[in-house]
Length: 121
Image (cartoon, rainbow, N blue to C red; front, side, top):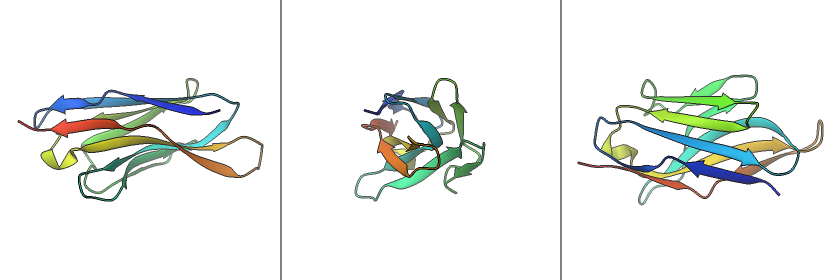
């Protein structure tokens, strides 16, 4: 059984910073990619940033230059450093992992439980 455990959300003032962390644990697996999505009030879930096992990163245009995603492959963790936060960054942030359990087998999507980030003065 795979678990994604997130930490690091909270309340921050505009212009402030937060760091989100996510650890994948459980059955033996290989990680194809890990990333972060968010869902704001009344909005659909959207990709914030992702990082493949090969080191290729992707960012939503709205966070480029402000957010940085990083991984520790040995620990199966992914972090999201969020700087210059804006009120529109307020959302529930979800960790995502694309995992493979058998070499050359299918990949499966897993999600964390979500962590609230609120940017407000």
